[in-house]
Image 1 (tube, one colour):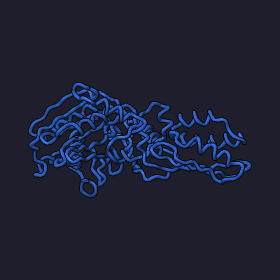
Image 2: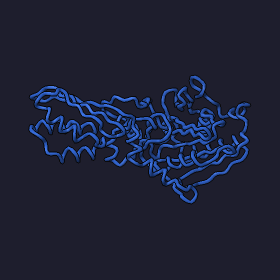
Image 3: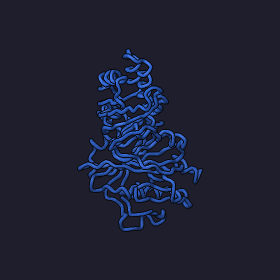
Image 4: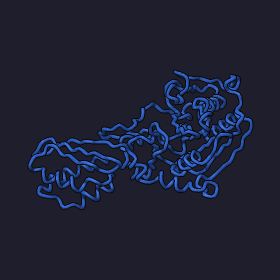
Length: 359
């Protein structure tokens, strides 16, 4: 974590501090035109697992098509409107690093800094980006806060960070809001389900695009300047444009993508949680439905009060819903295909409210 409070670095004196002498390691910079989020996240994991960073550091610059990326220990249903995003074909991805949920589109730049454990320096990485922005736009008020976010004008978050640290290798990745769709940033990171869980929750912040402060900034300008400053921190450097799904260059990377895009990883890795919904029935008054979900599957169904009129329905649903995936598609198919017992009107009311969990 960077020093407490806001940390500002003048671009002119960035390299004057003895603490910022050039690294004896060479640096490698990778850029890509690939915008598949699962593919780019798979590349990160491949690099982390396969590459020895003892003699080199690496910077990877990438962008994704519209996606919500959640942290490894988060609950997607708590972080975003899952059913709506799937309907609109906006990707939902679970990365292997921790931290909160973020929205990506082509107006967002992603930087990943790879190193060995001894060279890991999150704050130094962020200073590279801050220095680049200040060189491009000297009047831009950007700073690093104690959460390792980059803040614009002391208020608006333009970049958030997360990391994965292993015994040998590490990576630190961060976002950069250049010209992202701010409506989608807000809309895709809003969920209305009442969930009880121990999953990591995102910290909501006021966001702003860099182009709102300086409309001369572009993707190419920022990337070029970040690469320039990163290269100058090292004694030698190499720059490559790659395809992040190149099996000849990256043998086995497709398997990483396959796992990251699977339901079992995205939803099945969610820490167990409970959710509830209360609704009014004309004859019975308040009815409370509670579900418990573990590894993405419904583990328990409870309907309160347990009056005689509802015992048969509760038992019917309990025996059939347990083991079903907590997904709109699976639950809709299941509940619509069942032949309701006894009070069909009450059954339909309860099943409709169960489905509303996922809308």
